[in-house]
Length: 222
Length: 176
Image (cartoon, rainbow over all chains, first blue to last red; front, side, top):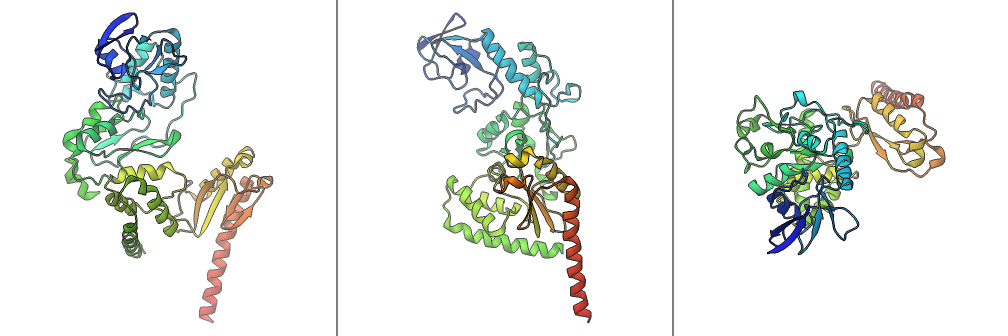
């Protein structure tokens, strides 16, 4: 057991765990989007979980930082909040902000974060940049909305954890990056029953198709 | 025509499968395998990605993810007249993207695709090496410097007319 100091609160924790896990467990909220509890190699891709650590010049990502004895951490400095707001606005600039027609409305992580960080749900001051495809229907029972997706990679992570390998992957590059299922040729994964990806999606990017029958029946006609 | 394509593709996939034997099954073999397939067939057929996935025991989605990350891989066979539009710095400054857009509109395909009749394909490239002629487009092996949107139509038309003339000449020879 070691002790760390977060926002002037003394916390005891096991050595070697990630700062984000420890803080969240002790009721200190740090904004995060791409983190799944207990992740061994977090992608650190959402850039939301920044914190200021005493003695370090640069802000650190809480999800990749391991706790150390007597570490002093601030999660709520003006600089940190400023960086988090910028990160959120950049995410909103590539997001189709159409909450009324989105299945995740009212339980959306972007909405929660915008409330928490007091950032309006709009792309400004950045220009909105959306992908051409609005809905990808290549998966037999899931609809994928590229313009809602944050590319956090949680769906890939849970699918791999639950099924050994993931039916999802990142495809393409840069602004064109999407989550893709390509051929969906894995007979060991029964998407119709699992739906762990839909559950973990922080926004409404993965949705069960309304007319979807059992995924394995449908596979024959694709 | 469709049936012929299918037979060709089956043959091609069988050939690819045969060539995988020399590659190990570790993840590091993925890119060399993809490069080998593209070198042989100028593009990566969809079925080939599935075969590669099976060989390396990884989901084909992952193969697809890696292949789409790199610009060097293409997913459509190049046309008989591959059009390469330069988007290097000099060409970019002089409106290379507008030239690209004009080709895309004229041929009704997107960059990276091939027309249904297999005549044309469009690709963007980084630098052809003759920046003084910017903006530049390569049609087949021919360099066209000082491209302008108005020249796109003429270029495509000329190739189509040439093709028609060849066909007519061939027909005449047959008839006569």
